[in-house]
Image (cartoon, rainbow, N blue to C red):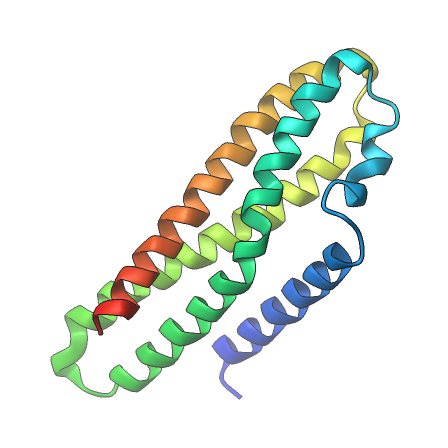
Length: 154
């Protein structure tokens, strides 16, 4: 099995595990533990951050599907050198999809650290997380749109 397929299988496994755990709870309940110790003044910011996460999380299944479709197309086109430009373009699209997926995983891992942040720094932490989650969302939507545009025109 080629290395890229193992990587795709690993990603798919973790993504499915993540989605399965998310489906067992309402979107905000999966983070209820982290909300418990927050002062009321930070709850609106916290809820805003989770709303952005909840907006983009369902798109991760589509992202994974696009990754698989694009990777398969690259595999099929690689053998013909006349497709070099197309393969290069597809590699850029796949790279953006991979970065978007990594951004989600990194954001979730980082956000889960909130309970280890001193209370005096939680406001600043959440402000930074608002910026981070918005950037992650934008990256995911841009990479999905780019992939969709390519796949729709093929």
